[in-house]
Amino acid sequence: MEKSEEIVQGTQSLARAFSVLDAVADGNGDLASIGRVLGTSRSTTHRLVSFLQRSGFVRHVDGRGYVLGARLIELGSAALAQMPLTSVARPLLERLSQQTGDTIHLSVRDGDEIMYVDKISGNKGLEMRSRVGLRKPIAITGTGKAQMLDLPEKEWNRLYALAQIAILSDEMPPPGFLPWEEYVAAMREYRARGYTMEVEENEASICCVAAPIRGARGEIVAGLSIASTLPYMTRQRLTALVPLVTSCAEDISRELGFTRK
Image 1 (tube, rainbow, N blue to C red):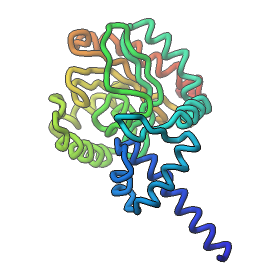
Image 2 (cartoon, rainbow, N blue to C red):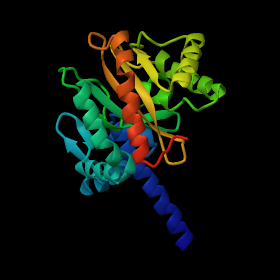
Image 3 (cartoon, rainbow, N blue to C red):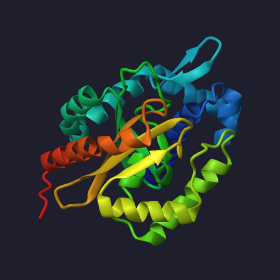
């Protein structure tokens, strides 16, 4: 076998191994379902899964099947630790959490979605579905809309349309999803004010106020939010929290090298 052919086969095997991890992350816990996702034979699927299991990237749990392994937790923790944003932001997020008692979210844009890279749960005994590593359509989250503020309205429309498709496919769509005319009017107001709000657009009964975080060149690099449930997060309280979330976002931005001109 020529060296170029070996490289191609090695690349294919690596791609398949990553695809196994994606399949398991999506809840495919047995060889048959993993093989269907990958389009591989049972023997090939078994070989890939066995390799990942020996390496600690997946593990088998009785009654559940294959799940992601501890090695991925280690790598994920290392990746977060190496991200300047999370290490810089963490002390300021903790301060904001102590000031409000609410859930604090930090997210970055990943394609047409946001990904949560840090979360501090509130102290009101209520837990949200959000978690570090979770992705959501950018246009229906507070931190996502904060990261859209510098984008042209044509891009708002495209991202809104993608979010709408996701919402319509949800078994229990959030009740706060806005028609486009109301959405764009709100976004124009948010852009003028430098912060965003989200009221049950992403998850029923969950509301938040968010602000953008900027990098050294002035570009928006992340979004920060204060979130809670409707009994605690009224419209009046959302407005009252604006100075805290924008101040914290500005502090993080300064730590990242941003200077407002």
